[in-house]
Length: 319
Image (cartoon, rainbow, N blue to C red; front, top):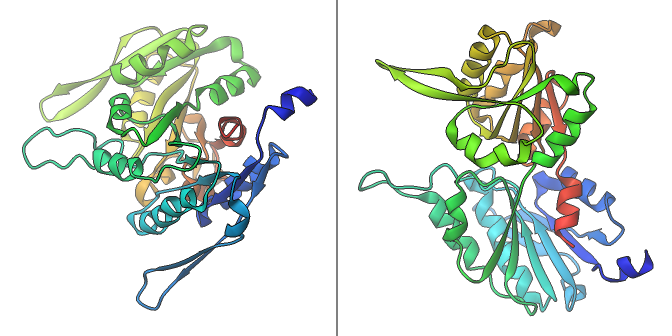
C-alpha cells in the first residue's frame, strides 16, 4: 500500500465559487488532494479583480482547477485564472471542466452558423504549457464525440463518463434484476450501448408526422420492466417526457431517467418534480451528476431527483 501511495502525487486543487461543494467532496476522497483558495472580486466597472492565494507556494507542485462555465458571465474570470496557474512554475496543470457547455453547438448546417464548441475548444487549447508539459483537460460525457478533435496540441483531453455511477446505483435497487435500459435515439444508443451489455435494451427514435416529432419504440420490449432512459444531457426535458409516455403505453412497470448533465435552463427541472408532495410524477427516479452545480443546489431535495457525485471519479482522474 505504501508503494502504491508513493506513486501518487500531491495535488493542490483550486476551484470556482459555484464548485465549492464538489471541490470539498473531491478533497475528501484523498488525503493527497489539498484545497486552495482564490479571492474572486470585481472592480467597480464589473471586471474581475482576482488574487490567487499562496501563489508563491505552488512552484514545483501539481496544480488543478475545477471549473464550471455555467454562464458567459463566469467564463472570463475563470479563464484568467486558468491561464495564470501554469505560469507559476508548477510541475503540472490539470483543468477539470465536468460539463463542456457549448457541446450541442458543434456543427455548421448552413453558412452563417457559428460553431461555438470549436471556439471554446480553441480558448482551452491556448492554456499555457506548464513546466510539466500540456494541460490535462478532464471532461465528462462531451455531447458530440467528434469534439475531441477540436482541441489543439497544448492540451491533452481526458474524456470520462458518469455511466459507472449509474450502473453502481442500478445494482443497489430492489428490482435490479428487472431493469431495461432505454435510449431516446440512435445517437444515445451508439454512444452508450456497449456500457450496458448486461442489460436488455430498448431503442426509441423520433419520426416526423406533419409538423410534429413523434417518439416511437424502434426495438426492444419494455413490458413489465423498470425502464431507465439514459442520455448525456437534458435541457427542457421534452424528449424524456415523450419517451416515458411511449414506454408506459407499451407496458413498462415504471420509468426512470439518467443524464450526466442536468442543464435544465429556466428551471425546466420543475416539470419532473412531485407536485404538492404527491407522487404522481411519471418518473420513479431521475439521476443526474453534480457536473452542473447550480442545478444540484436547486434539485437536491426535490423528488424524484437523486445526485450521483463525480467526486470519486475526478479524484482518480487527478492522479
